[in-house]
Length: 348
Image (cartoon, rainbow, N blue to C red; front, side, top):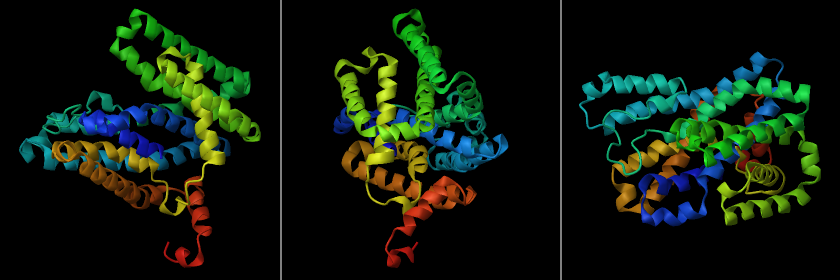
């Protein structure tokens, strides 16, 4: 659901078409991405605490992130061959193409987000895949989690978490109320690393206190919802960072983990990662072909259909084969199939 929220939000962000303005006003794709970081903090902490060694932990992270990430970069370059205004040989031999491959495979896509002659006329951005910035942040947090867990053990979970939030809050105030905010690089560091890390560590903390969270979930949820709605009424930027991070993080873990049942989607697999990393080039392509701009609702239907199909194919043919059978992603799928009627199980 969160991944689809990002897709729907980007329909307006990338087309700037008035037909999608209502979606953009009703769906906060930025908050959807921050929810991803919360869930990631929760699940990665689970993985870290259950891993037999640091090496085992990182092997699991590589298997989960890298196959689909490499695939979307290589497929984007191949897509560029069909969409570029350059001759094929000029495109293939262009330094920009090889820079795209190098910097994106190195998780440094901000140094080369575009491919030569591709999406140059798109209204909002020429980037091939603007969603990959969050994968860069995610990988950094994987590298930091041993240090985060060390500080939690040494200084206490709450004190370590409060230290992170105070640090990010201080940076938030500096950027909003001083000349630091005029520096594009500092602002990007803030929204690309510091705020996501606040959500990531909050998700981690919620895992460490998961039993207490579940016990008091019915009392916590309405309070968080009230604070979250208040933040929108007064403006998120006018709320202290802690009041922006904590309610949203708690809501997504409580609703997703304890309360909300939207059907048994487990047999289809974990499509969220694939949907997230493939939707951007799909939208950009449909914009470049004029489908989303001339037939916005038909184009939106095509975009969502293609994105869901890409997520499904990515999970079953690219992501799942690299995962261990003991992975909680695989176990969740197996458990979901087990509760299906017998006649449906035979089709899986």
